[in-house]
Length: 269
Length: 295
Image 1 (cartoon, rainbow over the protein chains, first blue to last red):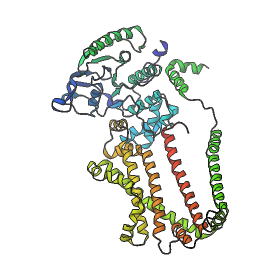
Image 2 (cartoon, each protein chain N blue to C red):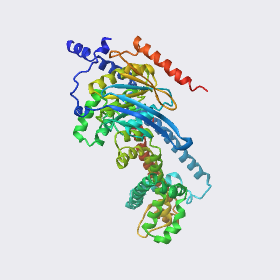
Image 3 (cartoon, rainbow over the protein chains, first blue to last red):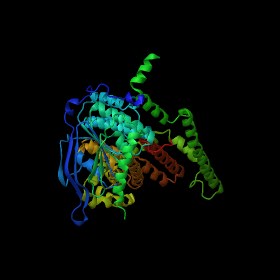
Image 4 (cartoon, rainbow over the protein chains, first blue to last red):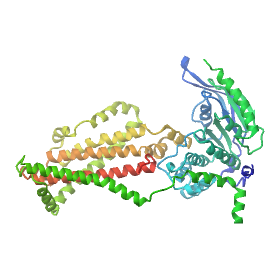
C-alpha cells in the first residue's frame, strides 16, 4: 500500500495552462444520436443526460452497442447531435483511443510536438514542452526513439503525452488500456490517476472492464445497449489510491457486473 | 546511498514504470558489424555464382560454334571492348546524355504524377473521370506512343520526353492515390482531434502517411521511364546527340556485336545501381516505420 500512497499529488499548479482550467464540466441533456433516416435509422443514444463535474473522473461502462464511443465523439465535437444538448465543454478537448495511433514518420518527441505545432507553439517552446510532457509520462529517455521501438504500454503513454499537449481541461479516453496486458494496465492506472490529479483534468473514460471502471472512477455510469441510455450511476465513495484487487473494488464491481449481465440478457434471442 | 532512498520513497512508481520499460527491451545479442558482414556475404555469394554460370554458359555457346564469332563474340572479347571503350570520352558522354534525359523526364513525371495523384484522390468526380484511365495507361506499352509523338514533335528531344513522361506518370500517380486511400482512419481521427483540417491535415498526416506507397510508385515510375527512354533512343535518333541508344544503333549498323553487348551490359549495370538506390530508400523507410523486423 505504501507504494501507491506515495503517488499523491505533488506540486499542483506548477503546470502550464492551469489558468484556463477554471471550467472543465461536461453537461449532457437528453442527448439523442441517430444514424441514417427513416425506418432504417439506428438509434445509438436515446435521451442520455449526465453531469460531469470539473476535475472529476467519470467511467462510462456498457456492453457492445451502448454508444459509448459515439458519446465521446459527440463530446469531442467530431460528430453532430440529433437532439438534446451538450454544454459547458471547452473545446477542443483532448482525446485518446485504444490504438495509440502514433505517427511512424515522427520520433516520440516529434509526435508530442506535433500537437503543439498545430496549436501554433513556437519551435523552442515546443521542444521544451514536449520534454516536460515525456517526463510526466516517464519516457524522458525515449524522446528520439521511433514509436515501433516502444512496447504497447509505452506507446499509450506517448499518446497520453500527446493528448496532454493539447492543454485541454477535458480528456476523453476511449478504452485506452483495452489492448494492454494486466500488469501494464495496472501501472497505467496509477500513472493516469497521478496525472489526472496533478493537472486537475476532467476525465471521461470509456471501458467495458468493470473493475477498471471502479478502480478509476469517481462515478461509474452504466449504459444500456441498443439504444444507449443511462441505466444507473454509481458513486464510488472509496479513498484513493485504490487497488484493483482490493475487496471494496471487487464488491462494487460484482454488483455492477450483475446489473450489466441483466441488461445483456435482455437482448437474448 | 541515502540520496537514492529518499528519491525512491518520494516517487516509487517511477522506478516501477521504468523497470517494466526496461524489461520490454529486447536484449541485443549480435554486434551491428557482425550482422552487417553476414548480410553482405549472404547477399554477395549467390550473385557471384550466378554471374559465373551466365558467363560460363555464354562461353560454352560461343565454343559450340552455334553462331559466327562476329555475331556472337566471346565474353572476353566483349570485356576487352567494354574496358577499352570505358576509357574513352564518347562512352561517358553517351551515358551522360542518356542519364540527363532520364532524370529530366523522371523529375517532370514526379511533379506531374504527384499533383495528378493528389487531385484524383481528393476530388471524387475527377477520380470517376480518369481513375481507371490512369490504371489503363499503366498497362499501355510506351512504344505505342512513338508514332504519335513523332507526328506531334518530329524527331526531337520533345518526342522522347513526351513518351518518357507518359510512361512514368501513371505509376507515380497510382502510388500516391493508393497511399492516400489507405491512410489508416485512426491517424486521420487523431489529426482531427488535434485540430487539423483540410490543408493542415494533408500536410501533417495524409501526405507523410503515403510515403511508402509513394516510393514504390516512384520505383515503378522510374522503371517505366527508363524503358520508354531506351525504346525512344533506339527509334528517335536526334542529330548530334550521341546517346546510348544512338551509339547502340550505330554499332548494329556496323555489325559490331561486341559494342552492342557492351551497351547492353552498361544499361543493365545502370538499372541495377538505380534499383539498389530505390531499394535502400524503401528499406530505410520500412525499418524506421517498423514495417518489418528482420533487417
